[in-house]
Every structure is written in C-alpha cells, then in structure tokens.
Image (cartoon, rainbow, N blue to C red; front, side):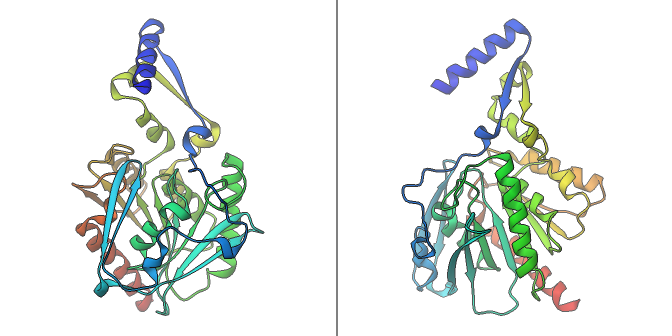
Length: 319
C-alpha cells in the first residue's frame, strides 16, 4: 500500500509539473541480505542445505528469489558427487566457494548472482543449476554474504579487477572451457568481468537486460512512465551489456522468461537485437512458463543448457 501511495504522489506531481525526476542510485540496486554471523575464517564458511552435494538422496529443494519460488527435485539416480571448497580471494576481500567433481577437463563456470544473491542463501540453488554441466565458482559481492566491505560503484569495480587477476593467474591456462554465467544483475557484472579476462569460451546471460536504464525503468509502473524522467547514477549508466559484449567473439547464450515481471523478456530481446545489429552471433531462448527465478526448474531449460555445454565440449575436443 505504501508503494502504491508513493507512485500516486509521483503521478500527481507529474501531472502538475509535466514531469518528475526519479533517481536510481546504487542503494536501489545493491540489496545485500542481512547476515547474522559473517564467517571470519574458512572453517566457518558454508552454504545453506549444502549437504545435498555430499550424499545421494531423493530431495526437493525450494528457493525463493524476488518472491518467485523455484523448486528443483533431485533423485538418487541424478546425483553427482561434488566437493565444496570455501576460501577468500584478494587478501580476504572476496568470499568464494568452488564446486568441483572428479571428472577432469570439465567446463568451469564463474557465476555472478543477482542484486540480492549471496553464497549462503542462494549458493546451493546456483550449484544445483550449474553442476550437472560444469564445475563452478561462486562469490559474494562486497558487503554481501561473507565478503567484507560495502556495496558501491568503486567496490564492485575493485572486485572485478581482483577476480580477473585471480582467474587470469590460476584458471586461464587450464585445458577446459571457461564460461561466465550472469543471473539478473549478474548479467552486467559478468559482462564487465569478461572484458578483463585473458580468455573465456562463452557467456550466459540469464534473466537480465540490455542496459541499466531500461532495467531501472521497470520499477516504475507503466502508466506512470510518461510522467517520470529517470536519472541514473554515473556508475549505473555505464552498465550496458550491448556495449560490453559487442566485441566478444565467443559463444553467447541469452535466456529469459516470458512471465518475468522483474526484468521482462523484452529487455533480453533488446540485448539480442542490439548485439546482432553489431554482428555478434547470439543464441536466444525464451521460456513460456519462465519467471525471474524459475528457469532452471523447467525441463526445456535443462535441454537447451545441456546442448549448449555439449557444443562447448565438442568444440574443445575438435580444436
């Protein structure tokens, strides 16, 4: 009710003045979830429900992201034993969890989460999403989860620089495909990180958008948008996935949900259209029953993602 009253006030002001300014700054974008006890050592680090990676069982895992409930069902027959290794990179500034299997040469995914994601709360969901196809690295943004600091333009830029240094030093020369996978806000974070890596085989952009301005306008009800002038902080204005990916020549997969009310599928379509106009080859899939968070729970999703990783592995074998 409070939100509705606020927008009614904006509408009235807009009608009276012809237009009203709506500022979107970093505080509206970065929304870390409260953490009761941050881990101060590797021994204290863990993920909620992470025992699903250590024992075969029939299990139903339900997560709630942006009020979109997502459920993944795991059977004993589908179980993949995964080892979790926690740690801190960049002299303790970035909390990281690695998911590894016994299979050599398996693709490696670096996953960038959404604006409210952290390792503890969503790490198991992201692990269940990715580990059927690849080993995985997830990390907490500054001020999120177990990472110290505060979320800001500067801290996020420093974070991507530190991640790129670590990945270029220790992971770039491995004989396996390296894939960046960005969910929601993470689509922008991963696209920025990609520009700093020595090499990467592919990037997946899931439930994200073409640029920050288009994404920010979604917080304003459609009826009020003609009366509102949107103003982004300089940092957010730089988030443009078309510009960040226009020179990339690896494989790009864009995934969107037709029922996504947070970042509507039209924004993913604009991303694909913008890249194709610049001569970039992009694979795009839109899911009729998909919302902002449930794509990994859809059967068609696993088929498409599995086929995408199959092509990456085949391409590696042939090269």
